[in-house]
Image (cartoon, rainbow over all chains, first blue to last red; front, side):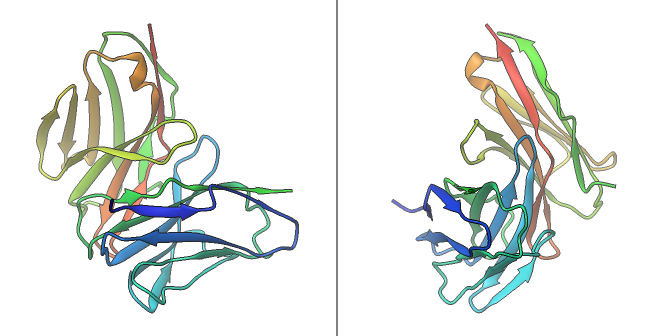
Length: 113
Length: 111
């Protein structure tokens, strides 16, 4: 079945540690996105990529990094510079720059311990 | 000014009633508008999309768009307890090809 796979579902990070969240899609979509959601709030854009080897910062990119070496994969690294990383992270994709709405992965819940 | 704004709620309606959810947006050039439903702890699920002024109906859901007023709404007829969720309004910004989300409206349907 085609879709977006995020892993892990739950992730615990110690203070000062970098962690990487995986996002893989087999939909042949060109554009991929990372959002962060805090309790009771909407989604805020972290990074997005419309083509391989290219990505742009969203509204809250500080403390995060991404890569887009393959069309199928768009991993997000939460660095130690992100002071408040506890949140629900969502990956999404669309074909090209179409406007038919995103397909979302099931999310990764990150907690600092 | 927030780019996409929704009433945060919570909105409580009795079972069988009509639930009305509202959203305003700031970019007059936006052409694509979406409503997502999100259950607690789950990812958002697309339930409606609308691109032209007027109404678009799909089952118990009706999306309404008024570009002159920069206003989008979602009506849920015959509300059911299973409709209890957070509803996110999203607007597609052609520049950058990205969806901007509102903060969501929590809906509670009481049996």
